[in-house]
Image (cartoon, rainbow over all chains, first blue to last red; front, side, top):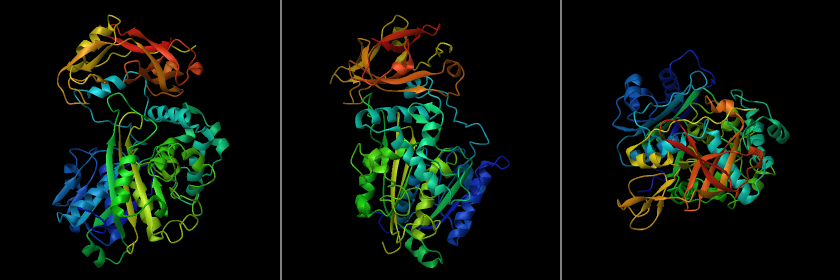
Length: 387
Length: 136
């Protein structure tokens, strides 16, 4: 069953704040959920499908109760930062199957205001036992391991990685809500403190509170709404892992999720007008654009070094909101903001300085977990109503 | 001068009990499939290559090369914070698996991809030792 044209994103909302010390996370989820519904011209009572991650208490149970909705379809697939890209794909499948017609996908978190809480487990997973002993201090170390290997095999340089941050910062200057709105140069990235070689501080995404939500609806509901909807064209997802100790750090799960999404959508990388590429770290973008087929494996560093990612005129305008590197990475999970900016581009509602002219087909790619061990990858291809 | 790397005590699952017991004797064990011969990492009771549940322990040579590494300059972890800078690496063992570990007993700036290394054991004081690697 293909989801092509079976579902539309009718509403999208990104929380305007980047530091939220004075509200509960549940409250922030409700704010973005209501924001996305209002954007679509829908209300909570219209919602019959709910999609969330597993970070807020028994998957959907606590939030469905808090919101006061009565869904006939729920899904709390947890793949870290890629979860929400997965959810939009699953929402489209659920709508195509007839099990709901107004699907709310919502997320929020406040890592900037609270110490990042991980679910406590009585028994460590067998993999964690062998990975938690070596001083891995946050996600950066795993991505640094990938960057070192990518540099070794393909000659990628720190200056090329920095170009990714530079492009994101050029976009962020136009976003009044961006956490880091100031443009930076390659030299400034290279001069920022080394965190975990070869990654500098400015190779890393921001840590922000906040959240976002989208509403996915059936074609029948979309037709009744006054708002421009964005058509779901295709979706792919996978988990890439350590592969019995034969881990290869030079590629991501996008090698699986990308081709599946392109095939379902009936388009190729050359058809993509705008791409939201998960940018937890600069190396994440380099490997992902290679794996999605925007350039050959190993060529990512060279591909980005002539402004290819800079909107509106680059070959692959990306992350025009400033991305996770400069704008927002709520709950340490960037998949939702990737979808929201793709929706803005397809509606022609991105900032005029970075709006891609005649943007008709866009891609949003999510990455979750760690590129250094095991990761979720999800690719979503969206289009205008006539795409 | 930074402090030596801390030696945290690993949690031990039933599948890896013999693995950790052997580390206290200075031996690095690998699980191997009795049916297809695949060397398994991290240790588990079944073979992820062929699905067989007939697997057994074999002793590794303790030799390998650095597949990739990072020199950590900022850390939030107690103990490790005082040992900066330190090296986290994937070491590719002679037997095939790439294992996450630390490279020790050398200047972090001297570590390179492809560098030959051999295993050393750091005693946790709890009947288990951590397998780390030093330049061979």
